[in-house]
Length: 281
Ligand code: AMP
Ligand code: MN
Ligand code: MN
Ligand code: MN
Image (cartoon, rainbow, N blue to C red; front, side, top):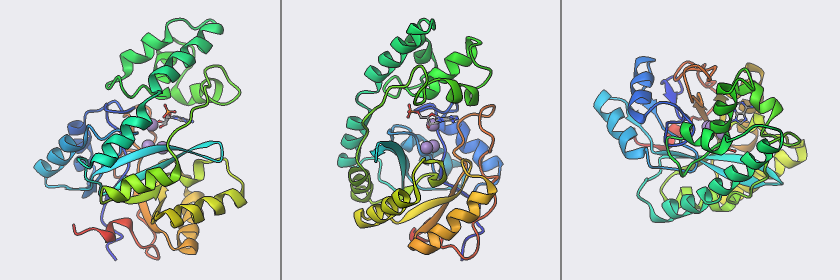
């Protein structure tokens, strides 16, 4: 049931840590055959009006989107909101609070990198940030690659900016309940992003899914650029087991950095109910 439309409901623009504008992303998605698209920038919805307009100009269907950073069981988890109204005040205000602290975190990251001899990384990272309110580890990663300290961003996230390595600063993001509430208040559907990426025990994963459902979360990403093909199967089973709707999205950031291009992943298995079945398209 509508599983086989080409939906790509996860990607990033220069408003967060992607490198393309909303308009260029829309063109790229459309060129790759995407029929239903969502721009899901990290903790920011300043690209939504442009993305919606660009999609509409190309005759491509669009769902308002966001990817919210939350802290849960001491880990950072991402919750995608789809079908959100980008003008909703609670959502706008909640995201503003969530973004707060990124600048201080950036300075602390730079101080740690300075201690291992990497100078001026705060200023360096900022030159990559299209939106100074949204300084991301990705911007530090691009700076470290440009400086020749790492060969690519993948290499950066093995040796820097992660727990136990230089440039790791723990951060307290929004709560699971806040993120789901903001998304619901804005008329959207909450989706657990790339569940295969979190280092959680089986028991913790079960607790996350149950708590997410209690808060009103409805969907998980099954086919994402962050999952292996084996994980497409694994999370299809999880979706069926917990009664989640399923989502599909590339998590595209940049033509050179992203392994998966917009609209090119396999379709959701026909046994799954797609998250877009909830929307009048
Ligand atoms: P932040 O929200 O500032 O902590 O940055 C998180 C971003 O870093 C994610 O959205 C990814 O784009 C990027 N990232 C995290 N881990 C990796 C990884 N292993 N490889 C590539 N990019 C990563
Ligand atoms: Mn990102
Ligand atoms: Mn994510
Ligand atoms: Mn993402």
